Image (cartoon, rainbow, N blue to C red; front, side, top):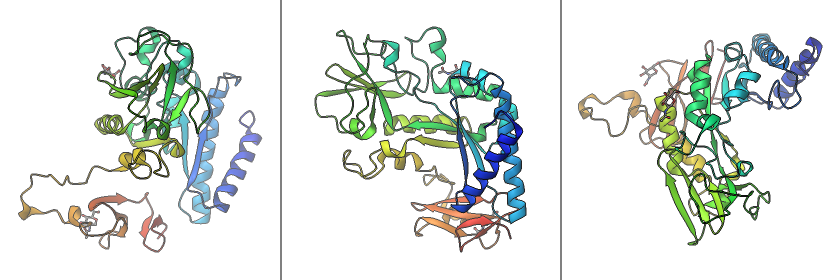
Length: 344
Ligand SMILES: *[C@@H]1O[C@H](CO)[C@@H](O)[C@H](O)[C@H]1NC(C)=O
Ligand SMILES: *[C@@H]1O[C@H](CO)[C@@H](O)[C@H](O)[C@H]1NC(C)=O
């Protein structure tokens, strides 16, 4: 697809046609990875060309057809060596709207000792290049290479990676010889979906890794490093402190989508993740005499999007009584008829 200009042009034409036909909002590229796994090293530059040409074509398509511009995003690597070989970071950052950093699969049963799937920080048992196998290190690298923080989306896994313990040891770095048994539903050795983890019976021992801010559990000789609501909260806090653009999830269907397993409603992890921090915290110390009219807007209103009559380039998003003032892309205004931003 990327080797020649004609190949890229054909792909871009067919992508736009497909996206418009089916009313998609945009395109996400998931290539693991340019310049690796059989892709020649010149694909690093060709990936930049693909992204740049896609962005230009999306811009023209929006102008020509007076439609909201299609979004362009990409799933990208989290290991430093892979990032360096695959991307011209500064050059792809501008044309991309979002950069989904795949901040998971940092450790797995292939390593022979236990490690957490998606830790926030390094652990004291990490050595060599493994000191970089964590979210803090990956995102630091993306930022150092020139990625704007507001375009980076942190990857939240809804699964854990499993190991079979071989000795009495069960902590981080304990010897293992492969994956635990496949989960009863996902039926693939090496990982368990959150809905296969959350309902562990009393035989499981859950431990928190304070230095990495993520949990693991042992169940007989099975070991799983996974994410729960507490680790999601830690990561959201970290994401906010570092001014990242937001989150993406791998995957929707590994959360307890039907609410059958965790006794915590549907999508317990993702619903926990999407709980926004309020525009003005409800616990604000501001005296009640200076109530903020913007922050009050959603009080008593159902969840949803609302017109801001005094400024059509913005709109209100109400969620659980909290108000979020949102802004349309430049040149667009909010239309209540479609609950979307579009041309005036
Ligand atoms: C997080 O990354 C930064 C930048 O690389 C580093 O200075 C800091 O020590 C890291 N924090 C932890 C707790 O590892
Ligand atoms: C509409 O948006 C502006 C900010 O663009 C805000 O200052 C104003 O208060 C909003 N209108 C209402 C009714 O809250």
